[in-house]
Amino acid sequence: MDYLKTLQDIKNSIGEGKELTASNKLIVIGLIEKEEETVGMNEDSFVYFYEDVIDNEIQFEFEEALTTDVYQLAQGDAANCLNTFSSFKKIQDNSAIYSWLQNAIRFTDHLALHYLQEIIKEEPERQGDAGTERSRYIQINQKKNDAEKAGRIMNNLYECRNKLEHRKVESSDSQRIIPPNYKRAKKQITRRYPEALICFRDSFASYYNQ
Image (cartoon, rainbow, N blue to C red; front, side, top):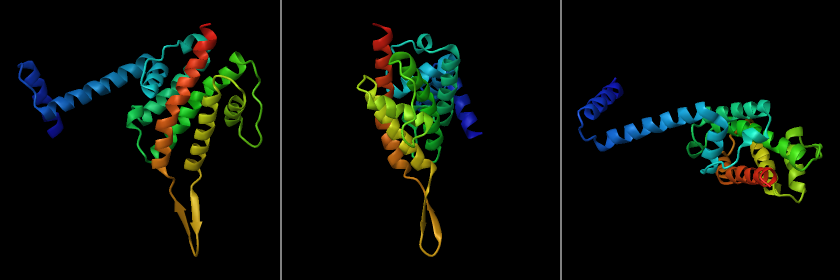
């Protein structure tokens, strides 16, 4: 109720043309940011997520390059990321980061598959004992192409995801589950994932804008 009263006071102050207190200004800014996030997600979660991660305009029409079905699937994966953490800058080093990374990888999988099949004209091949999805990034990384860096980064993020999923068990007389290193995962994600998306964006743009 105190929060609702504060909102009512803010509303009255604005209506009467009064100066807001510093704390109330922060509340208003927070509400505006939430509204911006909601509007951005509703307009196009793909673009909103991409631009939020790279902290810049996307500068490429992925919707024109990808098929409608693929683009819509990627929009769903982007929305799932945003529902976990509403902004890339708000990623936290807790268990929710596993869900976020899982959906971020699924989002990027669409780009990787299109890059392999439509841009460098290769069929995806299983790489050793790696899974089907991870193999795509290994395959991209092994080629001397402009998305090589993205392939390397995403392969490493797959490994990061696996470490978050499979918790270590320490045993002496009794077993004890060791929680994942969420802080290290956050550092790796926030530092490297934007680079991967920028690299894929530049690779798509170089091919389709030539």
